[in-house]
Length: 430
Picture 1: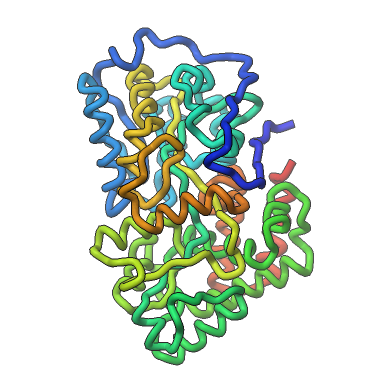
Picture 2: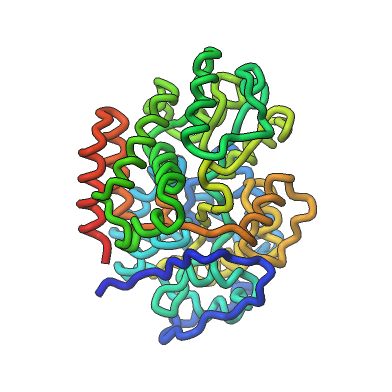
């Protein structure tokens, strides 16, 4: 049977006593020198090529340069939100036997295909050497563990079920920015008012942002258990409750900008909210970094709230970094991973990127109010795994479902999307 990632749905408490993860049967071959003695270039592959995401990467690289002055960081970034372009480029490089020293991947099920292809080194001993299981929440460590082994180091924790709103647009439509809708029906009613006021109610961009909206409509409609059941086989994709959820997604799309498919990445959609052309944008909390870097103030220029119907739920994803099999500079890669997992690296990176640290020892006193609220929510909310960002299902499953969701954006055929999603689940679920 195919190896499966542990997908824990229980709430993760940041203040809990953390337990280490054991049981790794094998360890990767020892490199010739400890990270502190590594020299040369370290090629790191990400999709953080511009905007607020590059600002976050630059902050992390700044800490790395201080930690390891004998090493030179080689930025191998390929543009494209959520790795939409980068993953295909990376797959080709790995297949050709030309891996980078480390590459970005979403923590969770996205790693499964790389693991099955034996393209990643086991980092369990690295975790032990750096005491990382004592510094990361146990729930996060569980999500990273495959058959007792860990294959990546998370740099952050993101939340995907956040709605960002333009305060002025809401007020002019007669809505109170401090009192968001409690469920989808109420949110649609609010969007009718915004539409009547002459503004685009909901800004989205191309394919992956639509998948992100789709997953959160599913979460809002089905609840935590129903949503989790889509990925573990307990929820019937052919059921009437899923039909209703897809119909709700179709209605949500009816409120979106007509040029959505021409927007190649998330930032232009968020910009529509910044500019007052649209009221809402359902986006991960990397949007917080964009608002902050553009000089916008929470509560004055923009507000934020969980997707209506998902209050008390944290839709989780995490960026993480790996050590590929055959990395040109494995010692340098381990140095990079050391900075990625460190409290100092995570403080610098997450403050700039809008996310929250995976390392609970990182200092967050000067983080934004949004980030402080996300830290609190992650400690007490129910945690689910994001579809669009590789936490819920492996890449192959996500790719097929994304194709069906993209097609639905054009034809709006509920039955066809439901049948395609059910067939994909039957193909990949174990």
